[in-house]
Amino acid sequence: MNIAVIGTGYVGLVSGVCFSEIGNQVICVDNNEEKVQMLNEGIVPIYEPGLKELMISNTQAGKLSFTSNIGEAIHQSDIVFIAVGTPSLPNGEANLSYVEQVAMEIGTHLESYKIIVTKSTVPVGTNDRIRDLIRSISSQPFDVASVPEFLREGSAIKDTLNPDRIVIGTSSDRAIQTLKKLHRPLTSNLIITDIRSAEMIKYASNAFLATKISFINEISNICEKVGADVTRVAEGMGYDKRIGSAFLKAGIGYGGSCFPKDTQALIQIAGMVDYDFRLLKSVVQVNQDQRMQVIYKLEEALGSLAGKTIAIWGLAFKPDTDDVRDAPAIDIVQHLIDAGASVRAYDPIATANFRKEIDIASISWEDSPLHAAQDADALCVLTEWKEFAQVDLTTLAQTMKEPVMIDGRNVYSAEQIQASAFHYYSVGRPGLVKVEGKAPAII
Image: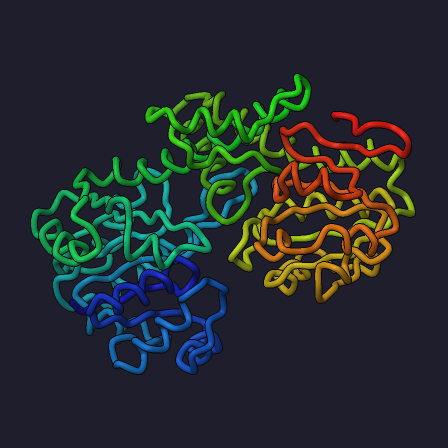
């Protein structure tokens, strides 16, 4: 099929590349001329494992191209995907200005029947708004559909090419048949529903996953007080098929481009229909508070943070991505700086993006984990990059001024820590503080 994808951000670029990979002719559109030129030269502006290779191979095969000419792309396509950003407004609502602008441009350039598919995450009722905007501009026939994305950064290619399900929301039988044909090579699990339910499925899914994360983090905080191990608790829970093991990993909370934005947006959606979504508000608050557990444990270990040097391992909100949007590291590093500490930071991929958020003289940007830990009073592990688990703990302890570690992602096993010299604080697991001349103490 001939497809146009408008927007070459995370969702748009991954979707366009993967649609071309399964044999479609795809034109990706962006109004940023410099970005289009980069993409045509094979330069990927985001880090996602496997994306660059697929993009280059399909571009060379003639199945994938990039342009800033939206009219040309619409003219050559049968299906037009809207995949532009819907960032949060100050009150938490989704900013739909980019979606509405694209809808009006589609209406301006519509010359024959097209299926307009919203891939962006949008509040319930947005596709009706898109339909009305296009109809106000064009008399050409078209159908509107909602096909929300469920990608995980770091595994987006796999998630796109091997999805759990595809949700197709539309009232048009013609659009249903075409979109089923397009997506059938990816999965036979096609969920056909109305547009408003499709819009709600995306928000409800992300809100539920965020709830699981905040729940297990609350359990982890109780585990620390009663001497239980949250990793064993989560394992035991996960065997229950009604619960499942996914998203039950305790840590310092979620971040990224989806969960924070979508939970806030759903709270606003509920408020607009006079419903107080108390559960989700608590989920958001728990997530925000969880980040401060790192600071509390640092203060317990070191006392005042003023004048201390703190090593930070991991700046991205999760491994295998360079995305730092709403990453816990932002709040944690900012608090350290405000408390008078110096920070030595390392991330294998995300440093450049993080420096756009915070870049001051009291932060030194290091090129390796050990360089970051050199002469540090404490180390905070904020992202579970695989390379951190491979660092020799004996060498690491010798590198630091004081062998104090706050493991915000439970990277290390109890056996590794017991064999090391570290004063160790984890999340929801009994920690070991080694005091000279005394037995290890549970904290």
